[in-house]
Length: 327
Image (tube, rainbow, N blue to C red):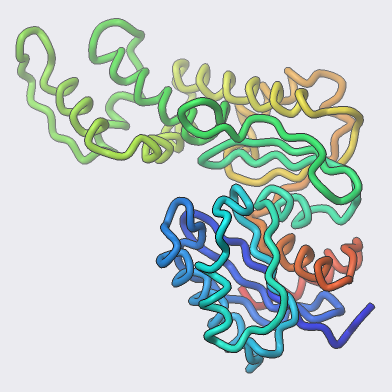
């Protein structure tokens, strides 16, 4: 193991970017958080700003210069979503980086945040939903991750969209009454009047107008309301989400192994997890589920791997514990 190497791992997401500075012995030397870091969703200029903000803060913690870093590995959705890496290469070079820049999947970073084994699975169920099977240390198969319009079944968006639909159907008289309705009205900051317009309640018109005025992906924010109580409609939505996540895992499943779980949907105990286990049947008991908060540790281990230092259980434990002191 090269103890002299210094690398940077980036967990560059659509909301924020986390940077971890790592030594050759897998110790965290610095940690920083910046803005949005994915050029596809944020645009190249804004993504570069977010990445550099996170890197600057990680370097400041140890007094390390960017010129001292040999490898930077950026883990993000879509990996090389753009054919041109100049959006980041040029910005890094301007700050003294002369090493090697590599890209990895955010799903692989999530996996290595919970396991250093060459075989296993990662299931991410946050705003979106996707499952991968890792073999030989790399992604061998992928299930879902097809985006809010065509896939992401069982995700926060999937749940939030069904919460919105249930409320609209309740107000329209085409679905069962649900306590999700007043919860959504309050979450949207609406104050409906007890009036009607052409047979439609003021509440329905306000809810529909509010939901259509926002980007579709923001429906994911309503998912938390489904977890708030034991309303039958909410429980039904959550159970269906658990079934979908189990089916996606089953699509890539070959044999029992560690399943690293990212995102908040499956991490919670309750209807989603219960339905997930029931759908998997006997296989559920054989799986080693490990929850991770994000892909930062995995990004650091992937940066070390790019520098010639392979991931090990000891390295995973070391980076996880030392990073915790910097967060």
